[in-house]
Length: 59
Image 1 (tube, rainbow, N blue to C red):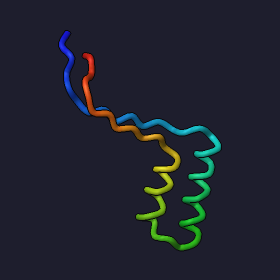
Image 2: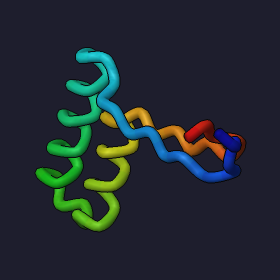
Image 3: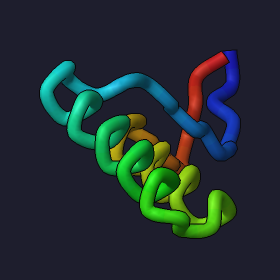
Image 4: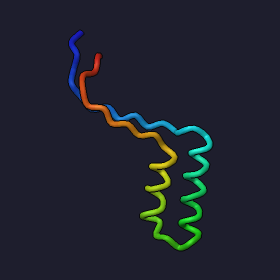
């Protein structure tokens, strides 16, 4: 086996209290007539734990 360089993106939900805060914040922003193009991505960044790792990956 030869290690290969690459890019990995890990997406997983955060713990429940922080996910509820993100969902409530996104819903409040949409309810307050904020543009959905801004409110939804920000809420997803709060709700999801996104990690981008660049480096060696074993196959």
